[in-house]
Length: 75
Image (cartoon, helix red, strand yellow):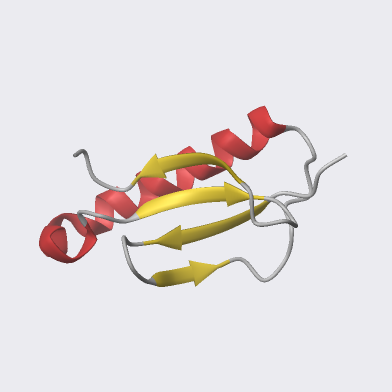
């Protein structure tokens, strides 16, 4: 059983990291949450596309293994 965590990263910088693990242990549900977070960021990122073009929402585990990435903006 895994505990998934969310974070937003740019190519070189941590932007945000969830303080708590997701309440789900199912990767599919965690991926849906990451996609929704990326979509919400996408709506507010239009005015700052240059700053956010390399941002991704990531799902990772306790060992910092990245399971999934959802880009904020299309590449």
